[in-house]
Length: 210
Image 1 (cartoon, rainbow, N blue to C red):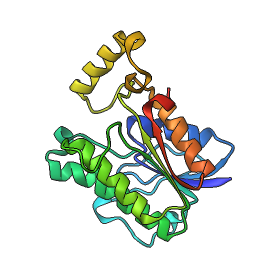
Image 2: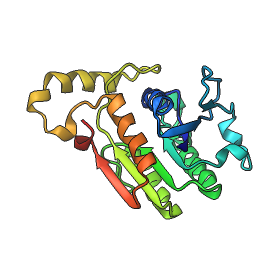
Image 3: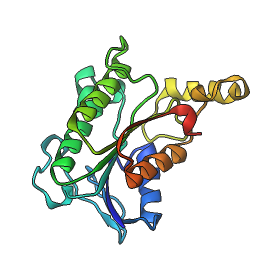
Image 4: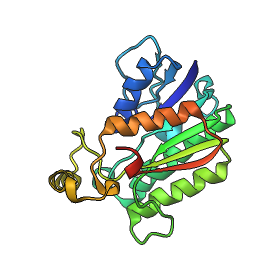
């Protein structure tokens, strides 16, 4: 059984990853650093941390694989700089520290359209993170790029919610890439990728998730 780190356990997709990992026979331990304590579970180690000052030498960085679902919006973050820190800097820093302590696989919940050359700030941020993760040299790296994600978020995202509703109405007419993806399906693919640790870099587009 493997030890899996989950970064972003309180988000919509992260909650699904946490549930599936705790229920999996392939996972012996889940390490989920969060700002606030999670409900206790026999398989869960939940360091309560300040993400602005991550403890670099904490023993719990020693895991087999990392799943990262950390993300926010510019509105919630308050600025583009704050958004970049959450969606780029923190996932990258967690990847660096886990790799330094022996992690061999990293699975990221990215986004459809991620491209470091994109004129769209959101897509460019996601693309820069993907690029910088690949430069770290993880033996196994999986980049999952969902489009619109279904489900109810703790933090409201009105524009995304409207897009989800419209996409659901038009589902029979939409190409698979642009259909709404349930969070549990994204979580399934993230966890499976982390556990399988297929060598090299793999990109899973939205149509492969539904």
